[in-house]
Image (cartoon, rainbow, N blue to C red):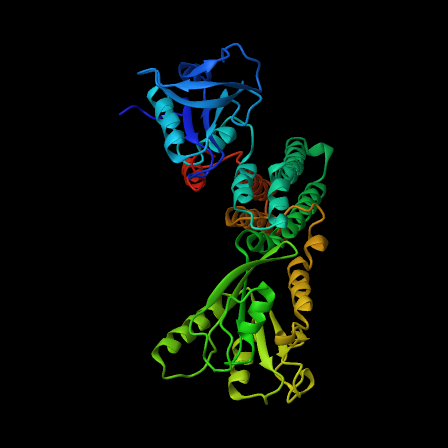
Amino acid sequence: MPTVTEYDTITAISTPPGEGAISVVRLSGDQSIEIASKLFKGSDLNKVASHTINYGHLYDPENGSLIDEVMVSVMRAPKTFTREDIVEINTHGGIVATNKVLQTLIGSGARMAEPGEFTKRAFLNGRIDLTQAESVMDLIRAKTDKAMQVAVNQLDGNLNHLISNLRQEILDTLAQVEVNIDYPEYDTEQMTTDLLLEKAKLVSQSIDSLLKTATSGQILQHGLATAIVGKPNVGKSSLLNRLLDEDKAIVTDVAGTTRDIVEQYINIDGVPLKLIDTAGVRETDDVVEKIGVERSRQALKDADLVIVVLDSSRDLEEEDRELLEATSDKKRIIIFNKDDLVHKISPENVDQLKEDDIVLVTSAIKNDGIETIKSTISDIFNEGIEDNNSSNVIITNARQAGLLLQAKDSLNEVINGIEMDMPIDLVQIDMTTCWETLGEIIGESYPDELITQLFSQFCLGK
C-alpha cells in the first residue's frame, strides 16, 4: 500500500452526495493539472491562465470512453486556498457520474483526500491559522445568520490578530525585562517588577473579556438549550407551537398528553434556540409517562435556559412549587399563561420568584405575549457581549476557551509571584508560559495529535 504523505496530490468530492444540478470534484497538489489533463479534452490545462474556467469533456484514459461534459477551473499556487495548484471539475450532478470522475482521477495518480485535508494543507502551508481553520467548520455548521457572521469574522483573522497582539505585548515586555536583568545599572528592580505586573494585569483583562464570550459562542454553534417545564395542562405544548409557528406538539385538555420530550430548533434574531417541550413533571403510575418524566428531569438539568409555565387560572399547587424550587439555580423565564381567563395567581402573590427572574404574562392560545418571549430570549443571549468584548470577537469552541484559561492561570502565577517577592527570573518563566499557551490557540505551536484530531472532524472534500 502506498505511503500517505502531505505532498501527494489529493482529490475528493466537495459537494454533498446525491442528485443535483452540479457536483464539484477537487484536486490539490503539484500534479493536479497534470492528472486532470489526462482526462480532459478541450483547452490545454497546462497553458490556460490561472483562475480561469474551461469548457470541455472528460474521457477515461484507460478505454477512451466519455465520462461527462464539464467545466474545469484551474488555480495555480500560491494564490489558492491550499497554496498548492488546485483544479476543480464541475460535473453534472449525480452519484454515478461524480463517483466515476473521482475514481478515474484516483486511477490517474491522485490520492483520496482524508477528512479536512484540504483545510489542513491550507493551515500547514501558512494560508490560514488554527482559529481560521476551526472557523471553516463553524461556517459549515452555522445554524443562523449570526453564527455565520461570527464564523466569517473569525475566518477573516480577527481572533488571530487579537491573540497575536497580546503575544507581541508579552514579548516586548519580556525583552525589556531581559535588558533590565542584563544591565541593572539602567533600571531598578522595582521598575522591572512594576512593568511585569502592569502587563500581566492588562493581558489578563483582555483574556477575561474573551472568556466572557465563550458561553455565547457555544450557544451560537450548538443552540441555546431551552426547556419548557410546568405541571400537566398548563399550556407548555401550546406555547411551543406558538414559538414554532406550527403544530409540533399535541394539544388537548387531557393532562399528561406529552409523554416524551419534543425538541425543535428555531431562529430567534440570529440565536439558534433548541426548544425542549417536556412531559409534565409529576408522580405517575403510567410506565410510559414515567419514562417521559425522567427524561424531562434530565433535560431540565442540561438546559441553558428554563421557561417555567404557570397556569394563571388555577391556584398554585405543590407541583408548581416543586418546579420553582427545582429550577431556582437556573436562568429562567417565568410565564404566567392563560391570561385570557380569570386569574387565580399573579406575579405579586407567588413568593418563590427570584429577584433575577424574568416574569412575563401570556395567553398562548390567543398568541398574546409570544413576540415578547422571543425578544426577551434574544436579549438574554446578547446581554453583556458588546460591553465585555469591544473587539467583537467571540470564542466558539472549548479548545480555545481551555487554552485561554491556562494562559490566565500563568498570568495569575506572575501576579502572585510578584506579590510574594519572588525573583524576577522565576516570574518571567510564567510570563513566557502564557506567551506559549496563547501561541497554541493560533497554531504557532501544536502537538501533531491535535492537528490530526481537529481536521478529522471535517467532511471529505473540505
